[in-house]
Length: 242
Ligand code: GLN
Image 1: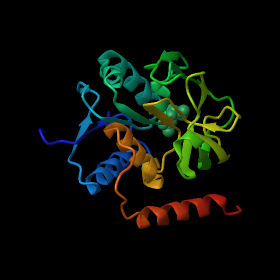
Image 2 (image 1 turned 45 degrees about the horizontal axis):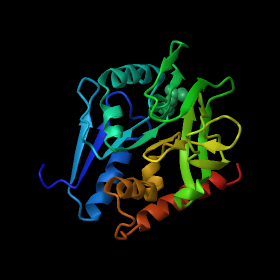
Image 3 (image 1 turned 180 degrees about the horizontal axis):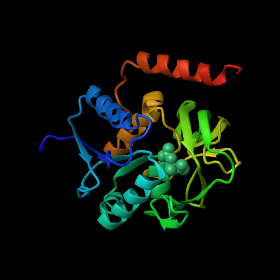
């Protein structure tokens, strides 16, 4: 598409798309279109080759077996690493987040290599699964409001020195390491345990991805009333006494 301003790639919807994570693609697409951008969205199944010329790549969560298959295919494909080398922005959720790290423990109980695009490593938590609503303060360098999301994972993710925590939790587990960190990011690659879909609950993260992809400092404002209502509802539900 000659007049495309933003190429958005949704990775492996056939393997990785739990808890409505595909909504993240809808939110980025819509918010870019509301700014008058022409968006080309490509949903790439796991039997297809990943394009390397995308601007934003999104990857969702998944059950343990599809996660193993997705990681194998992504490593074999090599396209995501080339895209990141070309300056693409990547936003990953849960299983997708673990896959972007150096290693995770798969459904067979075996450590499996990830893509190493984020300096993190995931193990399987010994305690109960981390399940429930999460609230957190975003890394102050991102200048974003409170994070709201839903988590459901067994994996525990440890950050290496070049990964910054995406947020610090006030409620919930996040990375599950007990240090209050949630998710990770470097300059162009982001990972989170948050479903929701997380970009519907936190649309300014979607805007951040668009700004980074376009290399602009600001986007024209859009009507956020619907998002604010959803955020308010979810934050109130999470903070209500049981
Ligand atoms: N299978 C992974 C875990 O349990 C990721 C789960 C998910 O993506 N929701 O840690």
